[in-house]
Amino acid sequence: MHPAFSVLVFTVLSGAGYGLILLMVLGHLIGLGELQDRNLLLSGGVLSLVLISTGLMASTLHLANPKNAWRAFSRFKTSWLSREAVFAILFYPFVILYLAGIWSMGAQLSAIFATAGIISAALALVTLFCTSMIYASLKTIRQWNNALTPVNYLVLGIMSGSLLLLAVQSLVAGSVSQQLQQSAMALLVLGVAVKAIYFFWIGKPSGSTIKTATGFTQASVRLLDQGHSSNGFLNNEFGYSVAANKLLRIRLIMLAVAFVLPLLLLLTANSLLLLIAALITLAGLLAERWLFFAEARHVVRLFHGDQRV
Amino acid sequence: MKLGLVVDLDTCVGCHGCATACKQWNTSGTIGPLSDKDPYGKDPNGAWLNRIRTYEVGDTPNSKTVHMPMSCMHCEEAACVTVCPTGASYKRAEDGIVLVDQDKCMGCNLCAWACPYGARELDPAEGTMKKCTLCVDRIYDQKLPEDERQPACVLTCPTKSRVFGDFDDPTSEVSQLVRDRGGKQLMPELGYNPVNTYLPPRNKPAVEVHEVSSIKQSVKTWVNKMIAR
Image (cartoon, rainbow over all chains, first blue to last red; front, side, top):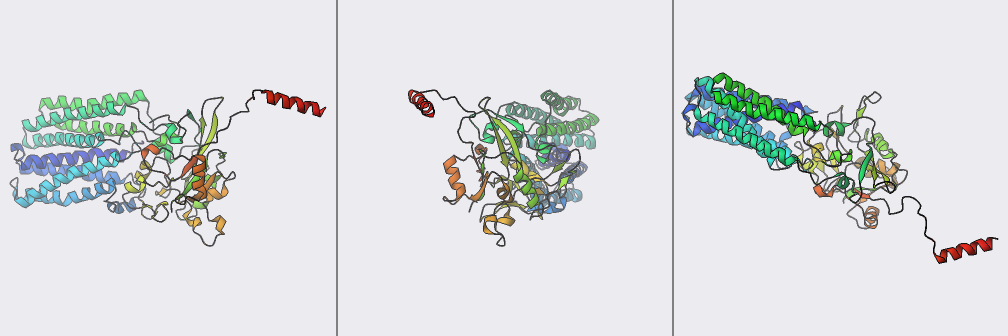
C-alpha cells in the first residue's frame, strides 16, 4: 500500500493526543497526586487538542475531493471511517467542557465537569479504536485484517500519550513523577512486544494466491501483460514495493527510535530528556506507520503478477 | 434482478475493444468524464473501468494464454459500499448494480482499498471514484432498439466473449452459460460473492496430438488408398 504522508501524520499525532488526554483524565480523576495541578492539566489538555486537531486537519489532505468531506458523517451505521469522524467531532464539546472546568475551578472538579472528562476519555479511546478498525476491517489486506491492528493502534497511541504526559508533568512540576515514569516504561515494553508479535504474525503466508485470483486453481499462472503501457491508479496505490532488506533495516531503526532509545532516556529522569524521548517516539511511530502501509499487500497485486500476498 | 456479465475466457482474444468502447461511452455518460492525466505524454495515467490482463496458465508445452478482462463484479456482499463514509457508493436494490454518486464522493480511496478486484479507479482530474456502471444509462434506455440495450463492452466485443444478463433468472443466457460451462467466481474465498462469472477455457488439447493407430483405422486407411487408385 502506498503510504500517504498525511495519513501517517494523522494517525500518529491524533493517536498520541487521544492517548495523552485518556491517561491524563484517568490519572486526574482517580486522584493521582502529581496530576492534581491546574497548570499541568491545562497544558496537557491543550497539547492533546493541538495534536488531535493537527492530525484531523492533516487527514483531510489525502482526500481528492475534500469539498464533500462533511458528508463523511452520514454512514455511521456501516462505515468505520464515518464512525471515526463522528466520534472525533463528538469528543470536542466534552473535552472543552472538562478543560473549562479546570480553568475555572482547578483540579477539584464538580460532578458535571468530571463526567465530561470521563466521557471525553471514553470518546478518545473509541475514536482511536475506530481509526484502527478502518484498516482492520479490510479483508483485501491480510496484514491489516486481524485483531493485532486495533491492539497496535490502541497500545501505541496510549504509549506515546504516556510519554507526552510524563514530559509535560516533569516540565510543569519541575520534578519527575515516579508513577508516570514507571507506567510510561511499562507501556514502552508493551508496545515493543505488540510490534514484535505483529512482525512475526505477518511473516506467515496467506490464503489468496494468483491461482484463486484468476480461478485457475489447478495450474501454474504467470502474468504475461498487465495490459497498459504505464502505471495507473491501481499500480500507484497498491503496487508500492520496497526491497525486503530495506524493510528489515527500517524495522530495526524504527524499533530502536520508537522504543529502545526513549526507554533509555526515561531512565535518566531529566525533564529535557523526557521531552526529547517523547518527540523521538513520535518520529519513530511515523516510521512504524510508514511500515504499516509499506508492508501491507493488497490482493489486487495478484492480478498484477504477484504469486501470493 | 441480479444483473451482471459472463466473460468467456475461451474466446477472449485480448483486443481491448471492451475497454475502449467502455471509455468512449462512459466518458460522456452519467459518471463522466473519465479523465486522463498526460494522455499523450511519457507517463499517461487515467481512469478506466475495464482492464484486460494476460496470463500464461499451465506449463509449456501444455500452457495456454488467457486474456482476462475485468470490470466491477457488482458483488452481492459489496464491501466498497459498506466502507463508504459519505454514502456515495451504493448498491441498487432493484438490479444489484453498484454505483458511485459523483456528487457525494470525497475521494478518500477507502472503497478502492476494500475492493479485491481493482474495479475502482480514482479520476485524476475530478478527484472522485469511478467504476463500471454496467452502462445503467444504456440498458434501460427506451429510445434505443431493444437489442442495443446492453453495456457498451458487450455490444462491441468482436468474439462475443461478454454476455450480459440477469443471474436471478435460471433461463437467462448467462445462467445457462454458467451452468453448462462451469462458470467461476474470482477469489471466492474472500466472501464478496461477485456476480460476474468467468467461463474457463474448454478442455481441448493445446496442440494436435498424434493418434495411435488401431486395426480399424489402418484397414480404413488401406481401403481409402486402394479405392483412390
